Amino acid sequence: MSGKIYQAKHLVKYYECDTTKKMTLPMLVNIMVHTSGEQSHLLGVSDEVVNERGLSWIILQYEMKFNRMPEFAEEITITTQAISYNKLFCYREFKVYGADGKECATAMTTFALIDTEKRKMSRIPDDLVEPYEAPFDKKLVRTPKPEKVGEDASSTEYRVRFLDIDRNQHVNNSKYFEWAIDALEYDFLIQYEFDAVNIKFEKEVHYGNMISSEFSRTELEDGKVLTAHRIRTDETVNCELSVVWRKR
Amino acid sequence: MSGKIYQAKHLVKYYECDTTKKMTLPMLVNIMVHTSGEQSHLLGVSDEVVNERGLSWIILQYEMKFNRMPEFAEEITITTQAISYNKLFCYREFKVYGADGKECATAMTTFALIDTEKRKMSRIPDDLVEPYEAPFDKKLVRTPKPEKVGEDASSTEYRVRFLDIDRNQHVNNSKYFEWAIDALEYDFLIQYEFDAVNIKFEKEVHYGNMISSEFSRTELEDGKVLTAHRIRTDETVNCELSVVWRKR
Image (cartoon, each protein chain N blue to C red):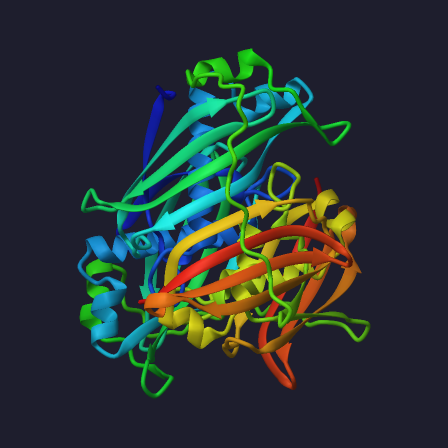
C-alpha cells in the first residue's frame, strides 16, 4: 500500500533540451520536483504551509533509471507518489512517461524536513504527511550509496551564481547535476546517454562558493561506462553522485 | 497593420524564479521565444521547416520594458506578433501579462535568417514569413543601441558549458543575460529590479570559450541605475547590453 498518485503533463521546450535534442537531466529533475510541489499544494500542505511551521523540505537522494530521455516537443506525463515515511525520512517515487505511454525514467527520492532556523533535521509531524496517504513504516530504508570517485580524478572549478539560487533560497538541486555533467568531455556527452544516476546530497553550497566538480571513469561490461563524481568546497564534500552511461 | 497575434499561457515554476521569488530574465526570454516557436509551428513554418531550407532564425536584438516581473506560481499570458519585415530583418513584439491581466513586460525583437552552411545572413524568402501576415516594409527600422561600457569596467570570467547549448546547437540566447546579470553584486540584485533592457548580439560564442562579462555602472535621476555590459571573448565583442534598474 502506498500513497495517492498525482499526475501532470509537460511539453518539452527547446530550452529544456541539450544539443542532442533530448531533455537535460537538470530540467527533468526540476519538472519532477515541480510536480510533487503541485501535489502538495492541492493537498493543502504546500511549501508555504510547511515554511510557516519553521520547516522546509530538502531532498537527500535521487536514484534514477532511464529507458530514454524525453525529446524536444514531446508531451510527457510525470507521476509522483509518496511511498512511505518514518520519523525522519519520506520516500517518494517519480515516473516519467513519453508521448507513446511508455516509461522513460523513474526516480526514487528521499526527502527530509529541516528546521529553517537551526538548519537541522526535524522529526516529521504526522499532519504534514498524512494528506499524501502513504503508510508510516518505522524501519529506515537502506538506499545504495553512489560509487566513490577514484584516485585518478579530474577536477573542474565552478562558482555558485546568483541564478543558481531558486525561490527556496537554496542552490537549486539541479545545479549539482549540471556541475557534474559539465565536467565531462563534449564528445563523451554526445556519444553516451544516462542508464542510471544515483546522487546523494551531503552539505549545501552557497552563493559565491567556488566548488570543485571531480570525477573518475571506469569501463563496465556491455560497453557501459561508470562515472563517479564528487562536488567539493575546499575539504567539505557537498555531494556525491555516480552515473552509469550507455552508448546512444 | 501588423501580423497575427498568437497567445499562450504559462505557469511560473519555482525553478524559473530567483531568490526574490520573481521570474528570472533568462527564463522569461526562453518562454517568449518558445511562444513564437509555437506560433511558427502552428502556421506550418516551424524551425524544422526553416532548417530543411538550410536556414535558421537568429535573434539580433531585444528591447525590453518592465512594469514588474512575474511571480512564483503566477499564471502569465504571453502574446507574440510579427510587426513587419524587410529583405533582411523581421520585427516581432512580445507582451507578457500577469494573472491580473495587466502588462508585466514588453519586448521588441529583431530576427534575421542565416544560411546554416555559410553562417551568413540570408535574404528572407517571402513564403517563410507570409503565414505571419505582417506587412513588408523595405525601410530598415533604426533600433537604439545599448549604452557603451565605461572605462572603469569590472570583469568576471565564465566558461561556456555543455548545457548552455540548446537544441538549436547554439548557445542559448538567455545565457548572455545570465552572464551579464551574474557579474553584478548580490546586494544590488536583490535591491533593484529591471526597468528596461536593451541587448544586441554581435557574434556567437561557442562551447568551451572563456568569456569576459564586463560592466560599468552609472547613477541616473530618480534613483535609477544604468549598467552597461559587454560580453567578450579575447578581443571580440560578442554582445552588448544595457539595463536600467529601479529600486524594488
